[in-house]
Amino acid sequence: MKIFGIGLSRTGTVSLTIALKILGYNVIHSPRPELVPELLHELRKWDGATDAPIALAFEEIDRMFPDSKFILTTRSLESWLKSYENYLSKRPKQATNVAVMQKKLYGSVEFNKEEYTKAFNKHHAKVIEYYNGFFKRRWLGKVM
Image (spheres, rainbow, N blue to C red):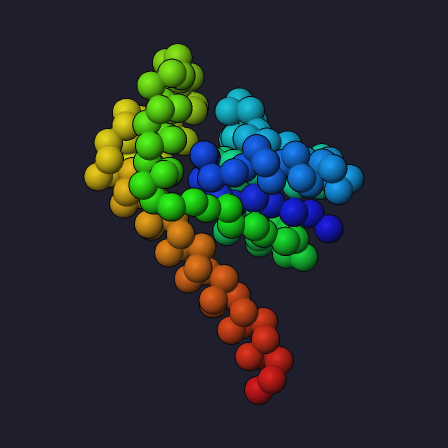
């Protein structure tokens, strides 16, 4: 069984990775940006993964590994915004493939409170909508 952390960066993904490793899972935190184009293939090598590349591709990952478990890590919006702004201010200029992924996930490479707020809310809504539909398909379908 594979386990994937589908929370955004700065929501406890490192802590989740450490916890999964303590439990004996061979997991990777934030697969290297150069792996992103081959991410689904690369994930076969691991028991799971966490952070932004996984959050971005969770639907595809679920289709590829249908018996996997998914954990949405989160924190309050205000706390996340402060943490992410601080993180970006200390981070060196990002590689092109990281910037592309960040733009897809957050709407902007540079910190923009409005864009990042939208991205945070959109991601959580997307995960909830996806898994609500999953449970309806999986469980209600069997009852009927």
